[in-house]
Amino acid sequence: MLKTIIQASENFCIHQIREPHMVSDGINEKRTLIAYVDIDVENGKTHRVYIASDTSFMQRISKLFLEEDDSDEETLIDMTLETANMIVGSAKVIAEEADENQYTISTPRFEKVDNFDFEYDEAKIIKIENDEMIIAIKEL
Image (cartoon, rainbow, N blue to C red; front, top):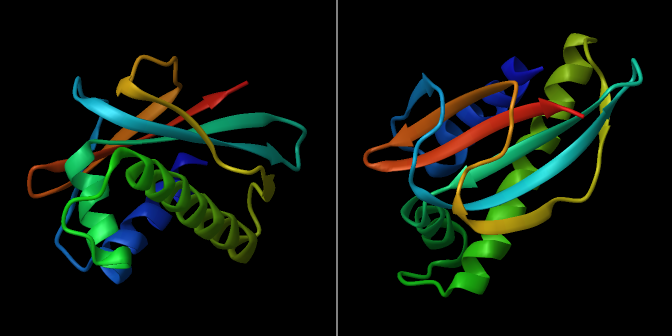
């Protein structure tokens, strides 16, 4: 399942941000804006997908979509929720087209601004220059 979410995240970097990116394993110790989306898989399992980005990553997205050079925290939170929705929604379409692990998604929820300290089963970091975003998944 993480595979389709990472594919959607990479598509987001390629087609929206339009900057080179790198994907690596794990999480980082940076202060991040953290949102999650719960997904219900057709096999009856529920997973939580976390999107956690440092402020500079989300500011990059805010600049792209809102043309703001210095967004306030509320705007960055809104952009975090929108980014989570776009990535997980795109992953849902990828899964449907591949006819594997089809699922429904819930409304994104904002968790907190802090270090990522949640339990997870798998995690990856997407990095653009020095900006980072964690994608993590946990079966509930």
